[in-house]
Amino acid sequence: MSQPHHRTVVVLAAGEGKRMKSALPKVLHPLLGRTLLGHVLSAAAPLGADRTVVVVGHGADQVRGHLAEIAPDVVPVLQAEQLGTGHAVRIALEAVPDATGTVVVINGDVPLLRPETVSALVQAHEGEGAAATVLAAEVPDPTGLGRIVRSADGRLEQIVEERDATAAQRAIREINAGSYAFDVVRLRDALGKLSTDNDQGEEYLTDVFGLLNSAGEPVAVHVASDHTETLGCNDRVELAGLRRLLRDRINEGWMRTGVSLLDPETTWIDVTVALDRDAVVDQNTQLRGATVVGSGAVVGPDVTLIDTVVGEGATVLRSHAVGAEVGPGASVGPYAYLRPDARLAEKSKVGTFVEVKNSEVGPGAKVPHLSYVGDATIGAKANIGAATIFVNYDGVNKNRTIVGEGAFVGCDTSLIAPVEVGAGAYIAAGSAISKDVPPGALGVTRAPQREIEGWVARKRPGTVSAAAAERALRAAEGASPGTAAASEGEAIHGDGRALGGESPEGDTATD
Ligand code: UD1
Ligand code: MG
Image (cartoon, rainbow, N blue to C red; front, side):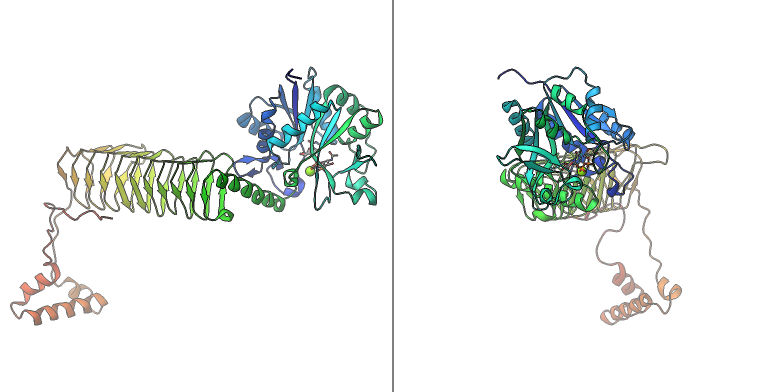
């Protein structure tokens, strides 16, 4: 009993999936983080099989390529012509002539199957010493599926496909879910005896049950408690239905572990995502791939995170991130775009309409508005003014910019890489910085401002601006009936602000 069982897994994935109407083989369609085939393989993974064989046919090269990526140990076996599920298993077993023990066969198009269910099927089979065990389920609508035909004493007699069934058999709602466990020796023997005497002229794997039963071999049924696990996928409408079911299952799982989902129906979380306790996910949010959200973080509404790690207590609002890292307590958005290798340190801020790529934003540093940060290192507590652009690309090469700790970059600055702004340096608003600025210095490149008096009245007569200017000038004249020239100058420019490059205080937008 304690002897480990030898197991071989066979996944059937050669069919075309005609009704998907797709250039992509059916089993490669994605479903919340894995392909259909990927889901089936991960449901079988805990069996600890000696070998896993996947029968490929339609789109064989694409399916093989995908397998090489996600499960390089899997043995793909080509079934050039799809002559039935029995034929497919026969070919699969030819690739593993030395297999002993149990063969677990799973249709490639049942992605909601749980690992626990596959394990329970196999344990029941091995525990009973059955020759063959089929996974069954009682379903509300059995249309199109194979029916489990039992004898008066409740034992499995045979499995009948709907198209070969009698009216009485069609009324049965217990169906073949498309997963099986077999004793390899008796399976090989029975596969050699399959006929094609059925409506489709195919070798049916399901006929193995009738054959073994007639030969007096013990065949068994294992009933799945949740029939939705056994749902197959034949077209895109069914795929969308499976996606909703899987979404609900995933979301319920997270809520039960202590994650708040404020609107589960609009929250789509891949099976590959990890969420810590007390994370909050607000509505209309997609968490995909290797995304991780830490405890107390708030993500959403309207957020897409792909392969992105969000630290404890961080917030991400109405934003899109791919391959990024958001540190603990950091804040992102609304409307930020984080691209691969955007790394935001703890308590940093990337605000509205800001794009960050391949850059570090240091602890407590802020990029609050309307900026592009590419190939940069921004030091701790540096402040990057609105509309600052890190000019990283010279048309040929990408270059890096370094902004030192505590530096203060004025609004509408271009930092033309490669360039370094020293720790605690200031950059005057509107500068184009292409030379290094030493620590504590002010970098400024602005041209001096000049005013051409009366330009609007002369060059833009009759415009809204000209009329407004005239009114303002007249009002100023009325207010101080001194010399017209002096009062004009005061009304337009005399707001007391420094206009040169000397004193750029107030040059960054603040939050
Ligand atoms: C099969 C079962 C049916 C069961 C249903 C559950 C048979 C004869 N019938 O029917 O009792 O209720 O699954 O979903 O097995 N495939 C191959 N090579 C082939 C034929 C099929 O690899 O030559 C693969 C398909 O890609 C698919 C799986 O086997 O992944 C099942 O084949 P499919 O044609 O979908 O069988 P069903 O008619 O659904
Ligand atoms: Mg099917």
